[in-house]
Amino acid sequence: MPTMVVGSTGGGKSQAANILTTAALSTGLLNLLYADPKGNSSTALASRARLAVIGESNVLKLPWLVTAMLAARGELAAELAADQLFPTNEVPGWMFVHDEYSLIANDALAQRVWTKSVNIIRAYGIWGLALNQSQGQPQWGSDHPRSAWASQVIAFRVNSKSGSDLVPGLMFDPNELPGDEKGRPVPGMAVHAHYDTPTRWDHLPSEANAERMAAQGLPAPPYTTTTAFDTFFNQPDMHEFDEKAIVSILGPSIDGRWQVGGRGATHEFPEDLEELMAPGNKPQPAKLPWGHRPEPARPALTPVQTEVLGIIRNGITATGDIVDAATAAKSSVAEALNVLTRANLIRKLAHGNYQAVSA
Image (tube, rainbow, N blue to C red; front, side):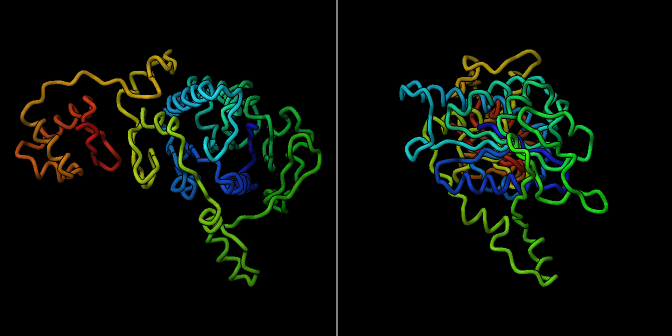
């Protein structure tokens, strides 16, 4: 069920998210979508997720992709005549982990789409997990998205008085969880909704923490975050409906995954997505069908544009190398790249690289 994990820095919410994600993906029935608007919350998750969207500006565009994915899952459920999709080997599900939700909570599109989505994703075989600094309403944009995520709550110590702004089922105020002599949270102490007794979570240390433990003469932990992820992440092959939905927005995968933003990024949201995201617009399947991207009108290519397209199709993809290989001036090559991108003949990847997308 949709789950919110809240707590102040150092309380343990990221540790809990790592443990929950490791356990979920160990089943071999779920792929991971990881959203991180902060940009540096978990590079380990970002580099392993089937689909990772990193950075605030990118995560603000994620609702469009989520809409396409849910449309695909809805059509799949209709085709199977299933009221609910349970993750199986034939039809794997997803885990959606949304880190630092407060950074996008007050965006109107994000509020609308995520609130609606969280209320239906369980029926589509998707587990939503959102992390935030507080369970207070302002950190979720409004009471509606907060309530949507709060089907299950894991609350670590909260330093502010927002701990008194309780969510349904949370009977023990996280302000009352133990702290040390300096007022810092005792790591791992949390209270779960519908239980009024604090619970201590296991510690899944980073490699650096494990080294510090060894230096202090402490026993080596059975797993670190890295070794646990390497051992237990078991993401299955996606169902073709899921793949078509993602490809409709981001294009073909690279090495079986998509990463928008962050270190090691492989994809970008298309530029024309900005036009569809104008104020007041809503993601509509009719405007953004999940199965394919509408083909723009193909312009008659100039000699320079034809040359640049041929260079990219021959495997020269970096901007500087394309400029060096072309006979035209740098400004003309740059203009050709923009025209070819808008015409959906090439796709701009991260770090100034391009990919031919149409023969």
